[in-house]
Structures are given as C-alpha cells and as structure tokens.
Length: 236
Ligand code: ATP
Image (cartoon, rainbow, N blue to C red):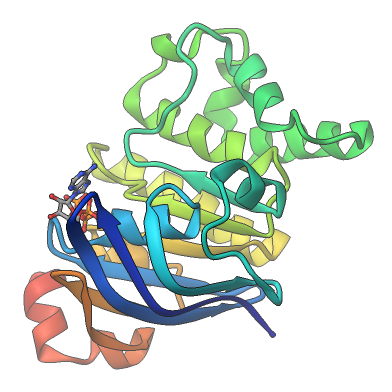
C-alpha cells in the first residue's frame, strides 16, 4: 500500500522555482531516501510535503490529496517533520520537549508507552531528562528532535540531515535508533542525507536530485551498484 505519493511536484520561493517536477512514492512501513548535492532541493522536497512552501503538482497521503495543506493540518494527519538544525525548545527540559511532541494526543497510556520507547531508543535522553535542551550536546539535541517527533505517534517521519555536524559514532547511534524505529514500530520515512552510507543503511529505495529534478531513482541495491552514485556519494 502506498502511504505517500508525490506526482510531478514543483515548489517555489517567491518567483524562484526550485523543484521542477519531483515524483516518488513511499509504501506503508517503507523508507525512501533523497540524495543530492547542496542546494539540489532535498530540504525543499520535505518542506513541500509538510506544506511549508508554495507547491504545485500533487501530493497524496493515505489516499487523500494534501497538496497545499497547511503545516498544522499535515502534522495532524500523522506526518512528523524533523527539520535540519533540529528546532528543539532550548528553554524547556528534555521531558517537556517530549510532552510538547505529544500535545495533540489524548491517549495517556499510549503517550507514556511512547515516552518509554523514546528513552529506550535514546538512553542518553533518559540520563538528561531534567536538563534544558540547550544544555545538550549536538548529538543529544538531534536525538531529542527525533524523539519529539516520535511522541506525536506519526505514521510517516520526514528526516532532514539527521547526521549533520555529528561525530561519526554519534551519527551511527542516531541511525541505529532510526532503523529500530522503522523495523520495530513500522514507521515509514523519507530520509534526506548528505551521508549516503547512512541513508542506505535504512532506506529501500532513493532518488537523487540535481537542481530540482530527479536525476536517478531506484532501489538501494540498484543505486549502490551505479558508478556515478559510488563516485559522488560513497567515496568511490
Ligand atoms: P542543503 O543540503 O544545502 O540544505 P538542499 O538540497 O536541501 O540543500 P534546498 O535547501 O532545498 O536544497 O534548496 C534548494 C534551492 O532553493 C537552493 O538553490 C536554495 O538556495 C533555494 N532556497 C532554499 N530556501 C530558500 C528560501 N527560503 N528562499 C529562497 N530560496 C531558497
């Protein structure tokens, strides 16, 4: 079953069109990757799905045309966006950041269970539960941003550059949790990553963007087998 489908999606900032017809789909419980150089339009593609940029073409989620929906409406349908730069609330504790993530939910037991899940996925956050988010390391803030998204109980997570600025071992830990989230909880994902090896550790298929257009698309194995992908994204 297709959960998310983009058909010929365009996006513009003012008069500047930056996406020129992007198409891909993500199945339920599946994970799609978006690769590409700086400025290719990866972040904008996630912003288009979330309703944060003027968009054309068609975006369908769970059988519903959500093109042009506002961000709050998209979130209420079960799509959680973890933006680049994390966006945690620095003045609030880890615990309160996680509560904010769950603010639309009424199922107290489910919220408590998901808090346990987050602390199990990210043991660092358990140790820092009472600390202000601003006092966390970069890696812990990234973990908190993902955990906060999990607290909304999404069916689909949009993950923007989760490894950016992290030490390799920290990035590995973050991606290990992301893989568990997918395999154990069945959350579908769209993963934007500069680090293609990390992206390929979780996605089943991916597209490569070049100046707002899809230059390649295929299964993980197909793409990893291509010389041009190996040269540009996998260090030869
Ligand atoms: P990066 O890895 O650098 O974030 P990206 O592939 O995610 O790259 P986008 O951030 O989607 O690329 O940017 C695509 C294009 O849109 C770039 O040319 C960028 O300069 C432009 N752009 C991004 N945000 C805005 C904005 N708010 N206003 C105008 N142009 C923008």
